[in-house]
Length: 101
Image (tube, rainbow, N blue to C red; front, top):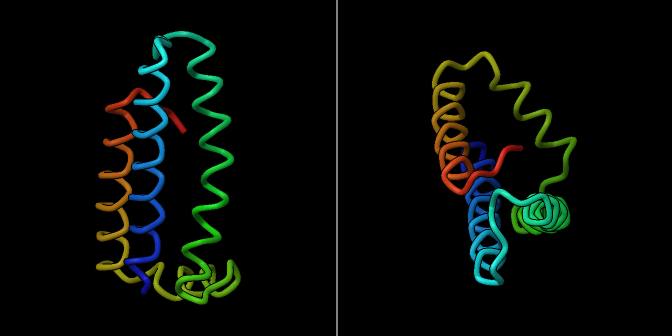
């Protein structure tokens, strides 16, 4: 659960941003335009909350429990290494579509 939880959220966010990017470019908006960036950011913010709630419910976890787990494992080298790997993959996918968090 500890690794799968952040991975599921990050993968879900990536898929969401990629889907939004595709929809917006399909409507003829340029990824360089302010309208594109604004709509992408707004839809990202709306969707991330829904996604997080969905993953929390799936695993029957709340923010307090998740925070406690992160604190428990924050000194664990394997945990940190794996979390960094997950984060780097997440960041690379977002950068590929020009999205900056």
